[in-house]
Each structure stands twice: as structure tokens, then as C-alpha cells.
Image (cartoon, rainbow, N blue to C red; front, side):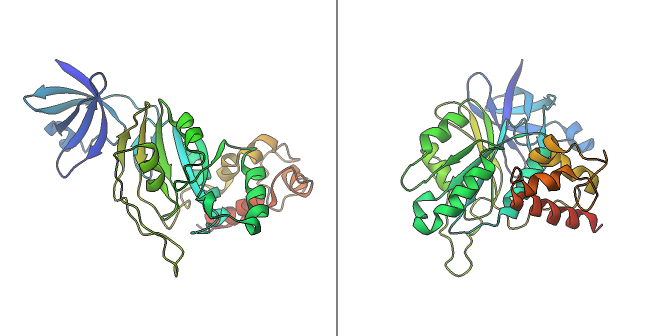
Length: 290
């Protein structure tokens, strides 16, 4: 009899599958035909498997509704982009690149401004600008793993969804997961005083079952976000505000140096955040090099 489950983790020569009905986790292997066809499931895939004593054999991979390419996870409901203004101070360009990749994959984004317990009066202006800029575009939750501020709101966004954490090393993804998922005991690492960045404490994507319903993936932190595969003429579609307001004089306007560009007018009028537009130009130059 075939059972259905979701792939939650990969091991050296097997995978861990959580049964859809019983929530039991079973160590499974793949049929030989998967290796011969160079086809294999990824974390988040729904599969059909048969029980063979205490283990299982994966028989088929069900159709995916989407796939996040890096880290490779299927059937995602939302990408949780974790950002910090202090320790580490993350450039807005990093967040905007991450949001571009989320938009490219046609996924929903949730922005988490973490470590707000570190912010003082001198950071109020930056925090205000951040909230004004991004809350117009995506849901934003302010959190602190230390003081537990904002955790209840975060839980509301996670309930009954498959979520993926993403962000630079050191922004506190694992710390937040330890708070919302007691018993996960994920390794965390203090941010280096010299380098202002954390060490990579997560080495592979794994789906964790949340006690209030839903699954969440803690993913490896990164120091470089690659967007060079994106065509220059497609980049504008991955900026939500540019996509919505791009009714320029020329239909193929890339909003760089073309005449009659409505986007540049909206930047001057303050409708579109200048930092977002400047980061768009920076990315446009980057993807145009090839």
C-alpha cells in the first residue's frame, strides 16, 4: 500500500519522510530508477512511498507547485527574509537582492526585522525609514529572540504554512527558530565583533514541524546573493513597485536612462523609495555585465 509524505531531510544515502497522516518520520530510500534517470526529490517534495518493515521506499514524486532554487526546497508558501540593522548591519542591497529572487520564484515574502532589542534612539530614523519603505510592499514583523518581542505575530504568519528562512549569516534565523520551535536546539553563533557577521551554523536545509501547525526550514546563511542569471529586461518585473507603476512613455522602458520614464518621476516625488530605485540600478548594471 502506498503512503504519502513530505521530504523533510536528506541524509548520506537516504531521506527522511514525514507521513502526511500520522506525522511519523520514516527513513526512506529511492528506487534504482531515480538514480538511473538522474531524478531525485528535494526537501519539501510530496512523495508516495511503501513501508518495508521499519523503513520505506519512495515510489514516486508528486507534482510541485513551486520550487525555490537556492536553497533547493519545493512547495513553499512563503520565504521569511530576516534582516538586521545592527550586529550585523546588513546593506539594503542584500535584502533587495533576496526579494528579487523571491519575486522571480513567484513566492510570497515576509520580512522580519530582527534584533530590535539592540536598537537605540540613534537608530530610530533608520528603523522608521525601513518600516515606511518595506511595509508598503510586504508584511513586516519586528522581532527579538532575546526579549521575545514580536514572536506571537511571527507565529501567526507561520501557522499551517511551509516557510523558508533566508538571510545573511548572523541575523538570528536559528535563534528565532529556537524560540518558535522549542526543542529544535539549533546551533547559534554570536556575531564576530571584528567582522560584524556570524558564522554559518546551519549546513543543510531541513523542515522542522512546528508545534502550532506548519513546517519551517532553517537554511544555511550566505554571504553572497547571486542574481547574474537574471536577464536585464526582466529585472524590473521583480521589483513590486516598479512592476505596478511602470506605465512609461516607452513600453520596453528599463527605467535607467530612457526619456519619459514614469518610475524616475515617482522616485523624485517620493512615491518610490530612492534606496530601492538605486539598488535596482545597481542590480541592473550587475546583470548587464554579461
